[in-house]
Length: 536
Ligand code: G4P
Image (cartoon, rainbow, N blue to C red; front, side):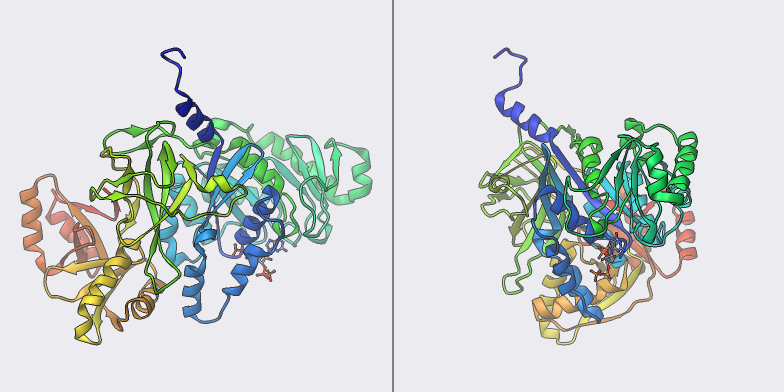
């Protein structure tokens, strides 16, 4: 072997990294995320029968908010990350909570993916939750593929939808397929790149290779068979050809262009094209910035970052699963690892197995893969794990809460349990916990009301603490920093009646109204006020 040739280990890591694709589906509730997820698994061969993912969702359906909570938590660990093999690629699909009150969790999941698949309900167009999630992707320049779903219904005109996506989401849309008709008159899609038509037939039974494909976009027989819908589609395709730019891989990878596909997930239609595009266009894992240096995925030493913590479903054990995105190297079960923050050693022998086709995929992992490590509070959100190197990955966002409540225990003898419970729930990212400098009552901060309910419910059922969650006068929080530590201390002392420390002891100022914050900001020009904190 020559000196500059990579070792077999590095070569293996390189080739494994190249075939990884890690993505999440983003959508507004009901656009068809669950259905599409299931169909992707079906088409890749990871599951044989449609219905298993769906059934899980259905069994979680219920009326009350409590059940909604359970529904959110009830997404079993196995379905939080799904791994499948398709063609020569290993695809990791990460689940994102649908309810907007859990959007913080979703934002963090999005830091662990290399691409996103946006599902749009063709009748409803761009909906609020899609818009919010997309903003997060755009802020990170995540490449986005677009799937316009439910073409078997009476929906919006495709040109109007294309226009809406461009305007609302600020991306150039490049159609890869174009629909012929819709609803009862939906005849299929024109594949604009492969120059052929895929004919629609309703039904869930077909999988790859069984649909009717006609060669060419321009065939006199089409007009006869598909009538007016074909003529309309032809006209629209002309327009699109003139108006839309050519697909440009670089623009796609930078999140400026999105390839668009039309289909009907429930009918297994258009799913294969999306899967193919994911494999062909979505990027393999790339380098990641850490505070100390940039880490390359093919480096031989293992490193990874915890982006999600989920309480185990078995309340008797209080195990928690930390989800780690592998950033570099090769993970093997039982290897000796270090939690950089605490210096503690970690030797994960049990690693959560994700839905996958091949048994050996569970025993090792490469950059782009997600591993789940059960632990008892050793791992926190944002933790970096390495083989020993002192690295800290950046970029895991925490958002300033938009709602506050104070929390007390009904039984003062349970104060200790309350604190322990809140600390764990805080580490999980379920809620943010603040300790005000003045007084002893803890404050909870959240982005959605449902988060408080989840916390009260879990405190009671997992920690045996009945908590009283009460209104708080605060409405706005900002983390404060200053280059001059003396100035920061002066600020904290002068504002001690509205200062608190969060779970990682970051000083936070709490105010009742936004104008009050503006006044404080102008009085303290050297202090920086942050609505977003990145884990450091
Ligand atoms: P979500 O995860 O984004 O919330 O959406 P989900 O897949 O659960 O789909 C929401 C509803 O839309 C479901 O109907 C689903 O069957 C339907 N759906 C998904 N894809 C298509 C499609 O291509 N065409 C049509 N017409 N409907 C589609 P549901 O009535 O809520 O549930 P179900 O009883 O049908 O399962």
